[in-house]
Amino acid sequence: MSMLQDHGLIGSSRAMSDALDRVSRAAPLNRPILVIGERGTGKELIAARLHFLSKRWEKPLIKLNCAAIAESLLETELFGHEAGAFTGASKRHPGRFELAHGGSLFLDELANCSLRVQEKILRVIEYGEFERVGGRETLRVDVRLIGATNADLPDLAACGKFRSDLLDRLAFDVITLPPLRARPEDILELSEHFALRMTQELQRELFRGFSSQATRELQCYAWPGNVRELKNVIERAVYRSEGELVEQIEFDPFASPWRPERSAQQSPTEAPLPMPSRAARMTDEQAASGPCDMETMVADFEQSLLRRALEQTRFNQRKAAEWLSLSYHQLRGYLRKYKLLQQEGDSGEAG
Image (cartoon, rainbow, N blue to C red; front, side, top):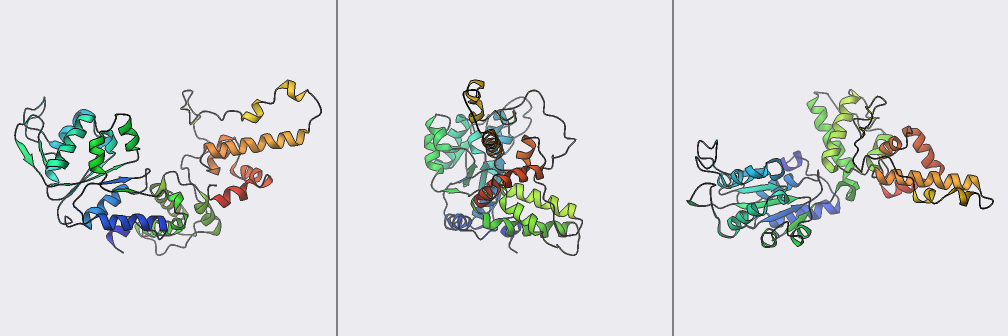
């Protein structure tokens, strides 16, 4: 197995193959590249592939998550600083651009950079030069920049939150990674890959596979956390199977009848489900205006609640059951009753 496969860049779907083909064509070029994708889609792995398929593969690949560094420190992390540049700067500190000289610099969450830092990055891309914080000496570096984000950079640029000239330079080519839900044919291949690795880590003789029910659940789940979430789910399932056939898939490790209740200060996504608009329009006056079919009205109300719960939880049936204060099997019974199970299953969004 190749190093890239070992790190999870596997899949035979058309969407993933097209993305990897673009990576292979762009890798040899000495140009900046933008990698766009949802969290967990493998942006850092794509950056590594771009580097190791380029002529710079023997030189450093330096990585920095711009969202993990305080704005006041990001400039010094990127460009370094001289001794005495600020309180506590007792000695010279080389920045990431210096460390990446001759190689590649991967900047994740690039949209988090301030406009001031963006201006200095643009100068490095255009002229290959910069000054350390607190310094006067102009340094020259040869670095290929690979940026990544899950933000809409053109929209940020239109709002003045991202420099348009920097975006123009970074966007020599933009590689947009497909979410896992857009390549369902890769789910089982990835699942077996992570299961085998976990089996080896646990020093078990063999992986006995997934039951048919577990396989269906894996294929029907929406995977909002993409490959990263899939990896965690599979490793947890293999670990808990104790070497037997994997029959139980737990998507939410926090699911428990003893889970602490939500705090009073809830975010909008955590707030209780609002009453569906159809039910809200059913006033006492309407109900009393004449004869009505109670069974039909109740059925409509229940279906509206079910659809709303599924939409709110991205079609994760276990979370939808929790929203509705039902057990998972009770929810499945309601979905079968109203033939919603088959409908959502066909779309690949039920979980």
